[in-house]
Length: 117
Image 1 (cartoon, rainbow, N blue to C red):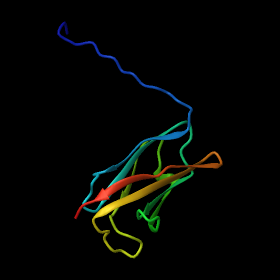
Image 2 (image 1 turned 30 degrees about the vertical axis):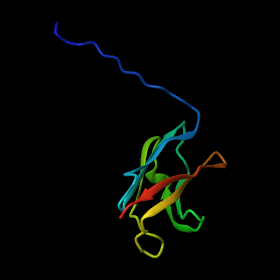
Image 3 (image 1 turned 90 degrees about the horizontal axis):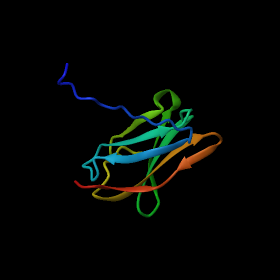
């Protein structure tokens, strides 16, 4: 075992409850997209909602994820690339807004992504 390489494992513990590293993948997309994010803190969110909007602010789709499907750490919300009526979205820029209620307040922010057909 003289040839073994020493290694270190580092990890961080935080009680700061927040969402981190929120990304749509792939971006730009041809349709279906995974919205991935990390949940930090001691408790998981009570639920998660993901809202998809046009650049004009019209709500196209809202996805709800129950607490039983959320974890401290890595999470994924899968979206099929369709609006509430089941139609595929056209090529363009759209906005997404994840909403995660925690501790009596909603944590949310708005980001953009693109669809290329």
